[in-house]
Amino acid sequence: MHKDPGAPILRKERWGDYCLLCLKSPAIAREARPGQFMMVRVSDQPYPLLRRPFSIHARTRETVEIFFSRVGLGTNILAQKKTGETLDIIGPLGKGFTTGGGGSKRAKEQEPGRLAPAESLNGKKVFLVGGGRGIAPLYFLGLELKKQGAVPIIFYGGKTKSDLPLADRLKAHKFALLVSTDDGSSGFHGFASAMVEAELNRVAGLPMAFPPLDWADAPRKSRPVRAASYALAGFPARVFACGPEAMMRKIAALADRYGIAAEFSLEAIMGCGIGACWGCARKIRRGDKAEWLKVCQEGPVFKSSEVVWEEDKTNEVSDR
Ligand SMILES: Cc1cc2nc3c(=O)[nH]c(=O)nc-3n(C[C@H](O)[C@H](O)[C@H](O)COP(=O)(O)OP(=O)(O)OC[C@H]3O[C@@H](n4cnc5c(N)ncnc54)[C@H](O)[C@@H]3O)c2cc1C
Ligand code: FES
Image 1 (cartoon, rainbow, N blue to C red):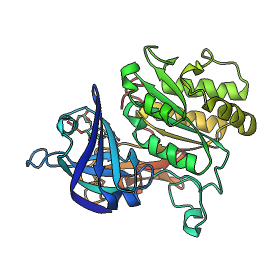
Image 2 (image 1 turned 90 degrees about the vertical axis):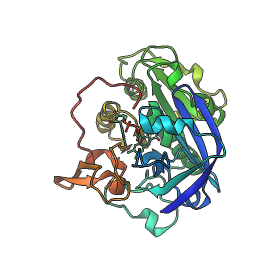
Image 3 (image 1 turned 135 degrees about the horizontal axis):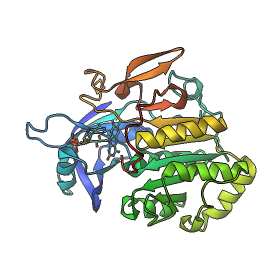
Image 4 (image 1 turned 135 degrees about the vertical axis):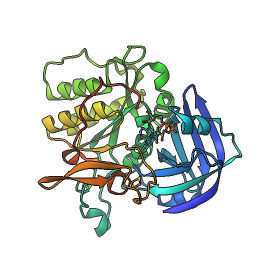
């Protein structure tokens, strides 16, 4: 973990309520893993005092990116920042997604709360499901999985077409991409979880509750890869998801139905992000019992069987 009090904003992109900031912070960039996050001070004024958590969306040797949607005071201030201004950031924080085990002994050991690292995901199909701003950590994860030879298929859902600002970037990086919108303005008409269900049913040869997916949005070059991966692997080896609680809960039920290992990046209101305040505590199943754990330290990524899902108070919404 590093504290970088003056990380300069090198690049900014804005699409309506969505914003991407690229920050120069070599120390954080070097250590970042997919699924980890940073705590960002949005203002040097006393208010708002608390840092806000954001997933690491991408990194290079020297830079880290965050991608966020404007939902309140902090994210509105952040969206006003300009290239050349600096931000006070802390990271990388938390435990990220479990990818291939790689060669090291440590990487092959299973930590509590994580999936056992796969010996190799080489050639294996992996589903990445992002709802709204939940796509943020999945881009970094997808790039990492590709490096390991996996075949990531990204399911990207939003309320409407303008909630999918990263679709072009994902296509440009030749990800197999399936998009859904609640209003049918782009791709599959329905929730991201319904799109995943339709796809799993299709692979399983079950009658589909939904019409066949429209693959028109998938990059042309990825189609043979996708077809080959279906033939070889059938079901995905893993499912990774981030988005609204209701979406993730449905994905967890699907993964359970088909016996697919799954991990989820959970959100929690965070006071400190470093384990000091208990503000992010959430009930997590460990062994036979559920205990209160700090999402900022034990997560934000948890495996499917451990998550005690919150009551579904609302219908699924695509933007988290
Ligand atoms: C580990 C982690 C990673 C995250 N990664 C991203 C990301 O990559 N991109 C992104 O857009 N957002 C991400 N979030 C959510 C983001 O932190 C909140 O949207 C942000 O802190 C809201 O700040 P605000 O001041 O604009 O909102 P506020 O004015 O404080 O509140 C506005 C609304 O946002 C809700 N909210 C506030 N804090 C959080 C929070 N921590 N989690 C969920 N809802 C919250 C409030 O309940 C309220 O409804 C992440 C959250 C966590 C815990
Ligand atoms: S945010 Fe303070 S303990 Fe997790």
